[in-house]
Image (tube, rainbow, N blue to C red; front, side, top):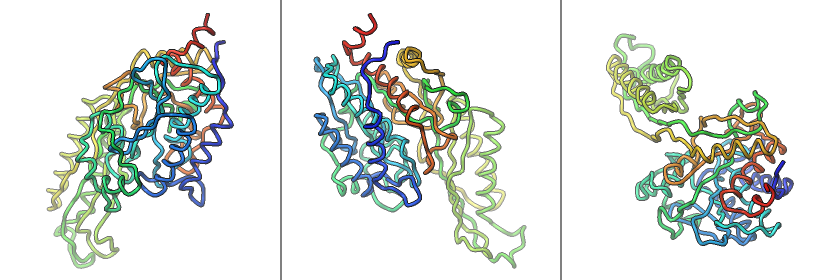
Amino acid sequence: MATGPCIDLDRLMGRLRALGDVGALPGGGVKRLALSDEDKAGRDLVCGWMRALGLEITTDCIGNVWGVRRGREDTAPVVIGSHIDTVATGGLYDGNLGVLAGLEIVETLNDAGIETRRPVAVGFFTNEEGARFAPDMMGSGVAQGALDLAQTLATVGIDGQRVGDELRRIGYAGDAPPLALKPDSFLELHVEQGPVLEREGIAIGAVTGVQGISWTEFTVTGVSNHAGTTPMAMRHDAGVVAARIALEARTIADAFGPPQVATVGSFRLEPDLVNVVPQKAVLTVDLRNTDNVRLIEAETRLRSAARKAAAEEGCTVELRSLARFDPVEFDEGLVAAIETAAAELGHGVRRMPSGAGHDAQMFAPNCPTAMVFVPSKNGLSHNINEYTAPEEIRAGVDVLFRVALARAGADILAEQDQ
C-alpha cells in the first residue's frame, strides 16, 4: 500500500482548536462572521502560520488570501483552499479544515524536504458562508469572475455595514485584482455536512459536483389592522400570504422529489404584535437541485404561487434574488484520482454530490476542480456540535495529500509506486 509522507495529525488538530478559539462561543462552537473583528483575528492567525511556513502571501481586492510554496517550475499552482468565516453558531470544521489541511500538507512537504514541480498554494476566501453578506461564496466568486467586484464591494450586510468599508476597516482590502489567482487546479477538503458517509460507514466522499442554488427574498405588503374588529373577509394579511409561500416551497420539494430541497430560513412579520394583522412580511426561500432545468421549474412555480397568493389576499409581493448559482460538475479525472487514492490507502469511498455550496464550485469553470468529503457526526454542521473524529480527518487529509502531490508533480510518489 503506497502512502507517501505522513502528516502530523496532532499538529493539525492543534491548529483547528486554536482557530476555533477565535470567536469561541460560551456554550461551544464559534461565531466568526465574515469581515468581523473575529474574522480579522482568525485571518491574522492563519496568515501568521503561512508566514512561518515560508509561503509568499497575496491578498486581493475582495480580501481573499493565498500563500504560495514555490515549485521547480514557475507555473500555475495547485491550490488547496476553503474558508475560515463561520455562521453565527458554527463548528470548528466547516471550511477551516480545508484551509488548515492545506497548511499541514505544506509543512509536511517542508519537513520532508520534498520539492514539487508545480507550486502548491493554500488559500482562504472571503464570506463563503453568506451569513453576514449575501451572496455566499462571495470572495471566490469575485476571484473567478462569477461576481462583479464593484457590486460586491457595495453589498450591505444584515447589520447595515458595506463589504468594502469592512474590508478596509479590518485591513484586508488587498491590492491584487480579480482573477489574479489562476490555479492549475483547485482541491478542497470539507466535512460532508450531512449523514450519508457516517450512515453507510464510508470514510471518503469523492464529490462529483455541487447542486444549483437559488436564494429569493419575498416581501409581502398588506394592511395593518385590529385583530378583533376586522372581519376575516376584509383583511389584507401579509402574514397569511407569507405562510402560503412557505408552504408552497415545501409542497414543491415534496412534489419534485429528491434531490430537490426547499428551505424557508428567515421569516419576519411587522408589526409583530399578537393583536395586530401583519402589514408586512419578509421571508427567504432557498431552493436547490442538481438539475438546472428542474431548479428553474421550481423557481417559476414558487414565484407564480407567491403572486397568486398576494393577489387573492389583496396584498402586493416583491421578489429579490439574493443568490443564484447553476449546478456545477467537477473534473472527472480528479474525482477518479480521489477514488484511486482512497482505495490505495485502504479507505472506503463513494461518489456523491454536494448539497451545500462551496468555494470549489466557483473554480470549477476555470480549472480542474474536485472535493474530498469526510463524515460529519450525526450529519450536523452549522451547529456548535459539529464534529468529525481525528482518524476521519487523517483519512481525508491523506487522500487530499496524495491527489495534490500527484497533481503538483512530487517525485516521491513516482518512487514509491515503482
